Length: 313
Ligand SMILES: C[S@@+](CC[C@H](N)C(=O)[O-])C[C@H]1O[C@@H](n2cnc3c(N)ncnc32)[C@H](O)[C@@H]1O
Image (cartoon, rainbow, N blue to C red; front, top):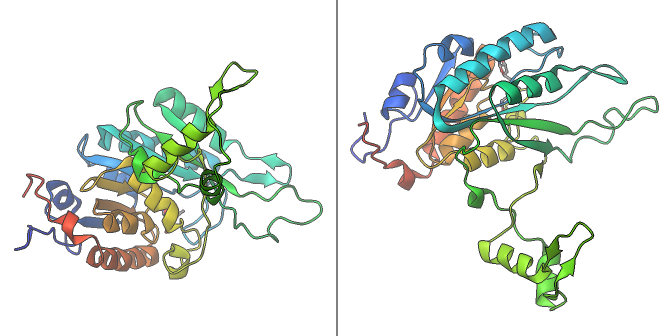
């Protein structure tokens, strides 16, 4: 139950049903997410942000064939869709990999095709890790360095999103051009038939406090203290990427679900942003790490936003 100040209690000892009822801020299950997802009621979570395991990659938590991976993801996608509210959406971070140099595995394109056809891909969004090491895949016989992951974003066309929450700061170049008066407001006509007034565009971005980002998000995969790599997870998701998605597709007090929680980075971002969080992790070592991180994030959350009365208490 909420404490004297109305703040929701942390997740230790809670159940996922407590989180749904508004009696706890987070819950992290130990085990296969499919067992938990299968028991969740329809329309109970607001957003899914997750970075699943990829097929044919050896990790502490094992290695899956493409066929097994598709079977698992069919179930996970179906059940997360069922668990989402009518305007909720789900984002899966996935990176294509190769069978050998010069031969890509098809699973990512297959996943995108069937989810787009059977559910809906809202927009193609990509994360560019521009800090991928220079030496990675750099041998003469190799190809280009893979540094882009798909953020497969699924949900209804009118999915909740907060464009203003993810504005990029105006570039110094734009600011300098405005300050020096070098931008004019002449109407430029393009061969395509389109027109543009550059100053007007730049001014509207300045008034909004930034610009809508491109669908390619350049975010460093830094092994910093705020990322799972610093906690020993070999395939952690950058905190900044998690935070951006949580901010974009959920609102204050919303329930965010991560079925493949790993070291808990999505949950950490959710709690720091005053959302509630439900997660699952199958590997006990990572589960323990994530619990610690979630506890710390809850303690450091934005308390003012957590004194919410969502009618469930
Ligand atoms: C790419 S990692 C997630 C990383 C996480 N976002 C982070 O920042 O640490 C995928 C995680 O899914 C977990 N996992 C794999 N299969 C699972 C399953 N069926 N149910 C729950 N977790 C699973 C793995 O143990 C691994 O920690």
